[in-house]
Image (cartoon, rainbow, N blue to C red; front, side):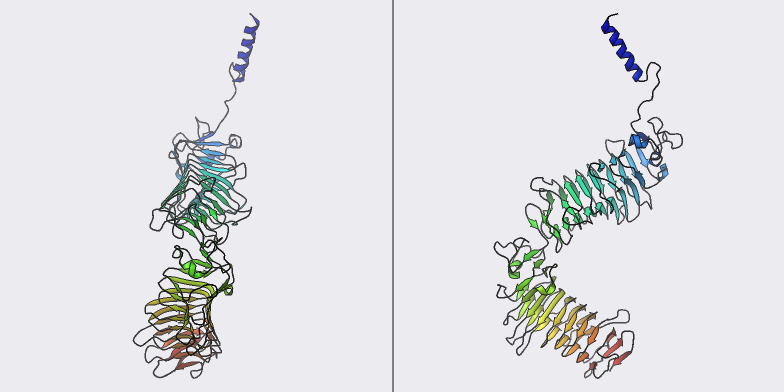
Length: 613
């Protein structure tokens, strides 16, 4: 026997011995623990081998060899309470759960009524080729990301993840705690009345790619986290499809979303064809511009309608436009003027000419806006337009002052106008009828300081309503008009006054509609501080200053007359649970009726009750 033959036979003998052959025995290496919810699976006699699988994932998680094998292989079938599952199924760190694939349809893990969490994934755990269905309970989730760190990201791949359809039943959820890093890719996610992926962890880092979100209330929602800096939640979205979300496809309440940049296009598709489609929503209230370049939008991306940013939010750079939280105005602005945060308009008048004025609020930064700056008065506000002071500035630092010959500062030209968070001053003294704010249509006034400093033979009122069927809401405003009326209505209107302060008015509130009409006004939680004349004067209609079921909580301090009824007929007016200039008030000094007026039924808060006359 030659030398080469001897060496060959030696090699063969060693190979056979290493494989357990030649009578040597040996065990094949275990590559996974197998589970079968069908007849072959058995939690009592099974050992997790492919020939003797366990019946439930619950039993498999108790196998001590899992910490070495790190893989659970699910055969086709449904894994639920009937097959022995007890939820939540907590998958340890670095363990992979793999369905029978190659699609997720074969291996279904389904929670039942009352199951808050179906599967909880530890750091580095992987879920592949499975369907996971949420339990039928609100505030629940099909998959909970319970861990994930840099280099050991938790991963969901090629799965179908479904909420139950109940409000608050999310598909995938990441809540507060230690940092979470995770990947969701190549999956289909649906959660009617809830979020497909809800990220509430302030330090989460998510890569969300090549997924389909369908029939979700919100596709991806970030609800927590800083809006800038190193310590923030970050979700990167690439090549996803969002179809028919009933709310926003992507909603950001905190943290940062990267949906595409100049150098790395998002390639996301937004097919929101519901009645009120919203592709992107930034409701953080602060923070830098979010990037969403290189995406496809149906219907087209439109600032203020399909791409939204609430006041103070940075908004979105969608490539074809910058959709910020408003059309910006700054009295210090210099050319170019385009209404963006970086290049604001110099006047409110110019901002109203912007094509997006009906979609985005006009945000006026701290400064003085007057004829000297170039404003044209009255500033006529079209239907649906909101003009508001910068919410980061003090209300009295945004000052809009009409000229001495300008009989109005603001005038409404359509329904749905909102004015808020500004100081509005009229200095008119030319002698004709004038007002700081002249209301002709349904309007909301909120958080304003309204001052009438003008004089003349007919000094200007603070606010006047002159058209029938107008609905006006005046909330959290401070109004002064030392030589005129704070709020005057001369038409059949419906007015709510709440949380306001009237100070130094000749007449704080005067309801003086012409005869034959029935204006109504509700006044709550309002202070009348030292009006020169009457706190509330009623010449026509009904004023409600509080009822037994809805207390007024109004305060009258040092008024010459708190309440005055000048009507010729009608029901007794109600003024229940208020504090008057004198407690209890007197019918000759604090509360008056003149002529045939029916008068007032009043009650001091926590005290005396009576009727005048």
